[in-house]
Length: 443
Image (cartoon, rainbow, N blue to C red; front, side, top):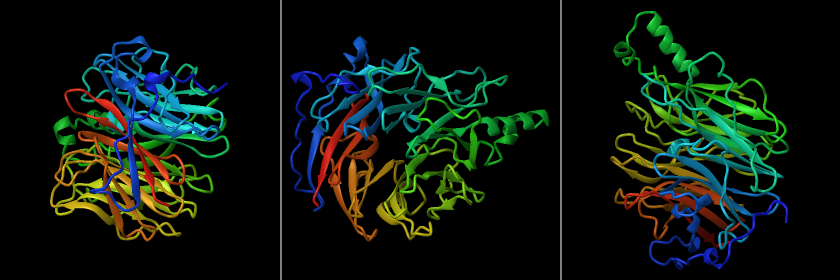
């Protein structure tokens, strides 16, 4: 069947059941199944001897309902991007296909990991590569893109989507979010280094050395730019669009589509008062000023590498989950906007005096409940925790996913009205491995 990769045999068949949860399980979650992903063990992906798998991304094919997984695999020296799909919610998987046509054209980068978008008839992948620039503290990167129109069997040669490529030194274009805008729109937004580099060049020309530049707390701020296609990635608009300046330079952008097709972005903004708090804004219209989700007033002398999760419900209300490290209230928080876009008081899902940097993502159930996944265990150890927030936005039930110790950057995806998948990178035993579980909710 066209658009369907051939499924593997019995050695990749049944998922491994971790068991129905009893202790530590919220009443809403009635079961968790650990999904076996043998192809991410690094020994047989496209015949390469790969030691690690990391940076997973999930999507559901809107035409077939198949679960699609992309991930990065490599041996520490070379990294490539792979994709597989499952027609039975992870019980069996297709043979992995390498996406990038240029060898090693990706790097594992946590917050800058690949973004997978599934639209009718098209799978799209966005990723950043690594460009070493002599004399620079941080590597540069291109915003790379490839698409498949046959379900992931074949991929177009990758192209770069940033428009600042002629006559300039390579810059940073990463920490991106991407989404399908409905109909034929694809949008990817990233944190861009062109304005930061221009400021640094101006300071150098004025004789201000790097040491003095460090005293400007906003010297390293990034700017959000985005690229747009109106034909599902067949072509792209020639010029990038500027969305928002003053961004924390290495926290990923979350993006979600509303019921009207408008795309909404969430990111960590570096506010004039020095706070690194979460903000949201419509992407394609760019209407108004960024809305501050909560006044955490988290002052941090650097970039914490932890962006927000965002989802928009059928009534157009924005839901956001995030980590803050503010003193006296560090932890994972959730907030929901009303119909006018104003956010209510945040709900603390985990709050401590201090807490290690953690990561959160969010998905919605049709009955109004929100589901937040994060890797903040009660004792500070990284483990996947799933919080079900009631339709009132004020109550939550907690479930710890078995076998998820060492988890980093979990991502959530709704498979149907009562089943979600959560995927993460397991950072234990000196290796990184992509892991996945399927969670079933009580209706």
